[in-house]
Length: 188
Image 1 (tube, one colour):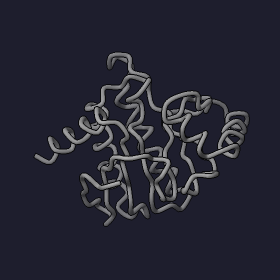
Image 2 (cartoon, helix red, strand yellow; image 1 turned 120 degrees about the horizontal axis):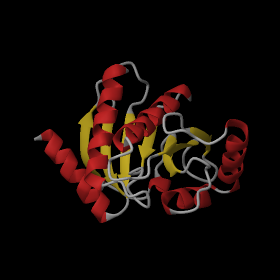
Image 3 (cartoon, rainbow, N blue to C red; image 1 turned 135 degrees about the vertical axis):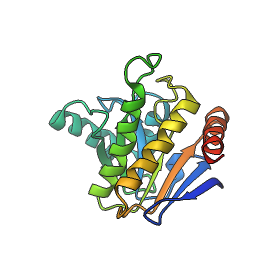
Image 4 (cartoon, rainbow, N blue to C red; image 1 turned 90 degrees about the horizontal axis):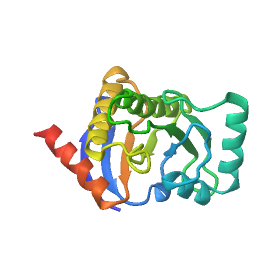
């Protein structure tokens, strides 16, 4: 797994763009692209839950029983189970409705909420998938721009953040190409 792009964050940390399997990331937390009921029925959510094992399923079910559906801006979390991470942060991204349902703001809230949750847990490293760009249909390059701005703004507002290693881990080529194009366009 190689780092394809890298840039410094205002707190001295690093944002990295990688191609690979998020479930193989040895970080404090990986972010799951979840639905509000933490059902983990498809996409990256199903892979994370399957590889994480019963603890992810059981703690997800318990979270929803205790807290209700998970909102965009306040992700749930569970133990990592069999994954090489301590936690799974379950972020709920928006379903794409043509840009008419405040999708950009909802995706931004999911990204920044995940960063905030990681800080609350005292973590220093986190890996994200491309939330909402799969079955939820969010346009990939647009999502990339939202991700990059949300992360940059978060660290500008939290210059003392303990998060030092922030990764965007992309699996498929179309998503990778879109995120690379957005990264390069932003840097130009």
